[in-house]
Every structure is written in C-alpha cells, then in structure tokens.
Picture 1 (cartoon, one colour):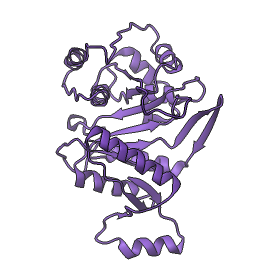
Picture 2: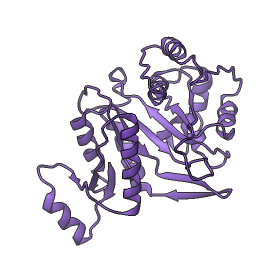
Picture 3: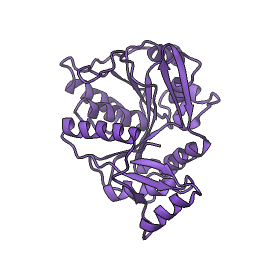
Length: 290
C-alpha cells in the first residue's frame, strides 16, 4: 500500500474528489514511476515465490487522516499485521551513513496507527541491504530475533517463524521457545541462549556484528525481566520503537542491520493498544510505504 500525502495542489484535490466516494480511500492501482515500479516488481516476485496473493495499491489522503485509510484496508482485508516504515531511514553508502527524514508528519501517522490499530503493528528501520554485489536473489537473508519474553516478543518470534515458513504461535514464552526450537532443529535456524549481565551492551553487540541483515525485536511494552524494565526507564529518543528498538535505531552506536520492531495486538492489553474493531485473522500483511 503506497501512501501519498494529499497536498493543496488543485490537481491532487480534483483527482481525489473525482474518485473518492463514501469515505473510502482513493486507490490508484496503475500509478507509474521508477520507485513504484521497483516496489511493485519486488512484491510481485515475492508473491510468486511465496505462493501468496499480493495486492498492490496506492492511497492518497491527508497525513492527519491517513491512519483511518490504513485501518479501513486492514479491517476490510482482515490483516494480522501492518508494517510501517520508520520516519527516519539510514543507509550505508561507501562507509558513510545517508540519513533521510521524511518529516514529523509521517511520524505522527505511525504514532496514530500504533495507538489505534485493529491488528499488530511493526515499524521498519531500513538501513538497506548489506550485500555488495548488487544481487540478493540467491543469497540467504540472515535474520536475528532478540527474545526477552512478553507479548510483543512472542509476536516477534511468531513473525520470525513465518519468515522461516512456519507460524509458531504459542501463548507462553516457554512454550513458544520450546515449539520454535523443536520445529527448527535441522540447521535452518540457529538458536543461541545467552546470559547477559548488561542487556544494552549485549543487544548492541548483535547489531554491530554485521552477521544479520535484519534484527526483529518486540516493543517491550510489558517488560518480562528487571534488566529490560531498567532499560525501558532510559529517556528514549523515539518511544514508538520501545527501549530495545530505540537503542538499535540510534545512529550513534554503529548498528548496520535493519530493525523491525513488533507491537502485538492483544485484547488483554486493550489499554495499551485500543482497537476500533475486533478482527478475525488471516495470513495477510499490509506493507505501508510512505
């Protein structure tokens, strides 16, 4: 779902007024452009390889109401997770960090989605590919799931299992880890358990190691250990990422991996993640690209 900000330009307003009816978002399935074409081809290839249905679309709306359009699609398609781009993207380019900040308005969109989404939400801090040959078609992507326990971390573990072609969904931390290890004891997934005296340094060491293209973490809204709770007490630059995600997203720690931060949609924690509608779940994902 390609999100485009509705501006005050007359051409944009006329285009939207012409096709927007009954409060539904405007979708342009035939929009052309270099970036749009590249993204569309990527998702089409993913759909063919993964034997799933990909429905590309473009939505145009004001930033102040864009979250409502996202929710409309999420409810209509009964998705299980919405993936949003973090408003600051950092990429490694010949040893230098290229930083792109798409603006405070887009950060507000993310925050409103996190506060009211009818399903789980993930924020992607994109640092680009670590591959240097320009091709990733035949290269296995290395993904690290940092698990401390709690509902957000269990959702991160579930997503990691889906990425390895198995949705391991369990209610308890111990059960989730046991099932995950049992299903993936044949070498495709490596399980490492570490005792860390300093969680901050342990997490940063993983991020700096260059061993993983992507690190998946939970938002840790409900810390399951005292050390994570202490880390949550630090002043976060971007609270929407949670304590671990904020740490890994910081430009001052030399992290090279992209980071995916998961917030679980759980009715037992409705005060943390209010919803507009109780949803059934299917294997659908919204990729929201601003």
